[in-house]
Image (cartoon, rainbow, N blue to C red; front, top):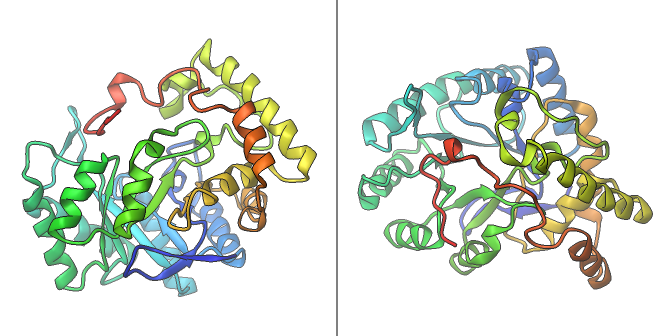
Length: 324
């Protein structure tokens, strides 16, 4: 696995990370044993960057990671997040007291005295940005976090935050079917020396080798792209991309990740899974070189904006910055 730098002053990490959201049961029931097998396979594949959050399974994802870290003692880079306060109604809290308390709880679950990267999971727009970045800079000075990150933000927020204290990473959704970050955010990260960490780079499972069955419960079942008639339209379009990938001898997820990696050496995608078998389908990605002809063909099959339906429903848009 090739490596990339996590921000201008951050550590070298694997070019592809692992998103640990599904360890919390967000996309279906799981077991600790299954998650531990996945983490062992991840390490064998050379992945050294793991992304989690306090709300993934309400601490379950971090707890599983803590068990694995304690028993395996691997050399890995950990990112976690805080900001959400469970409802009803669900709300965002970027206060120093909340971020500190949630970070301390995360560290306890992880069995660590620090994490390399700590994200504000969503921005609380009624709270002054200098106050929030001040909190994060103090956590860095105290050694509790190596750097801070921001999630689902606009380029102007990044520039304002970075001017107060250098930002390590920005995490927004980005994939072949969610391309908004191309309209300024990827470029702003590059200019400022900030890592861009695409989450859901495999379109929440749609960009796998096997067509996804339509979800009937959970997060995806309420997402416009997974409801009819959008789901069938998206499946048909993506099937043509699967055919293209197979013609090149590449797996579908590896090709989708290679497409992201080619967008800049500051991009570090974090596909998620709880299944060890899925990891093997990704591993080609950092060794695939897409030719200009490949890029042109991918854009023909999956043109910008091809996805039917918005990436979130109105009920899922809490504190997400929409800038275009």
